Amino acid sequence: MLVLNYAKFEKRLTLPRSFTNRSSNPVVLKAKAEFIGIERIVSFEKGDEVLKLLHLITVAFSDVGLNKVPPASVELLKYVEGIQDFVRLHPDLKLVDDLQVKVGYKKDQVQ
Image (cartoon, rainbow, N blue to C red; front, top):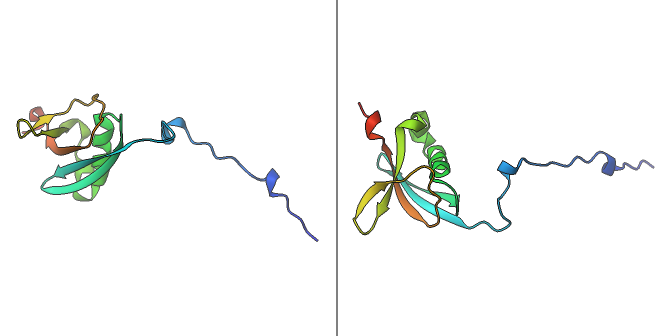
């Protein structure tokens, strides 16, 4: 009879900290994003920065070419109910609520 001991062959997979959740119970928020008239819902964690959300949106819109646009030439614009218009989001801002955003081109990048 042949008995294999898999315990000595077992390898532990450890992921770098950047790939693991920051907490055991992250709060997931949603951004309703628009690019060239196309809307998508993108999920992100509470406390993520705008720059990370921009990356997630770039991936979500890669099928329509947003991934081919240099990241330095785009910005996220948040819809503000009070003024009923979109305002620029600073890349370092931490996000704490669901939001509606539009991907825009930076004014100094438009030719």
